[in-house]
Length: 296
Image (cartoon, rainbow, N blue to C red; front, side, top):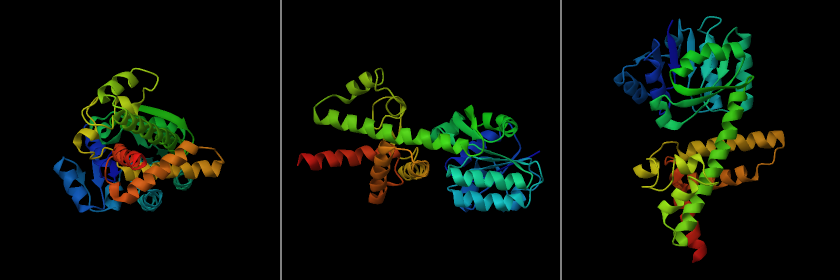
């Protein structure tokens, strides 16, 4: 039985390409450019959501926001048969995730919210981590498909738990990237060699993914967007979106997350300055400007 993949953007397309290595996949995207790219990479595509999901045993979505997820899943639910499995890999707010879970359940459909971590490189290499929320039986149904696109599948709990785990993870990521950028900015100011900073921190108590794997300065550590003029990667606008989701959740839960809030404000300023399409590690450029202004 075929698998429909809705949303063939920067993340969805490489995920769908990997999925075709094991499963019969038909794709759809509202963007004609995205559809042409998908066809060029060997994905069979449809001209509408309804025709893409008709007869599909599983539907995977990778969409930009909660509003899009609600709209697309409402349309999908009118076409697919009962017991169809819905896997939403979008990153959206917890409340919307729980709402669409409930809606799909009322229509006799199983659902898993399965946002991802690993960026476009992980999507291309099929090394993504999937954070899964939903009934255990639904997650086990989803596992073979997720394993064709990723390296780790982590059951996180009931409906919405995957989204909750994703926003906690990305709040840490945003905060840690800023900390790493500040460390390199300070090192530059006090005359410390960047390679020395990497060699020490990557093997000491400051070790973290933002330093070891995704270093925000060019020519240091494994290849990262910094070595490609900060082309994403994971765009700063998407980091701002995730940090905003985490702060909305923190406010709703009355949780104190001052570093998360400050990271959100820094990325908000960075995006408003026109850097939303750059990789989120490019925020090092804004921090360096702040330091120079203070020094002056």
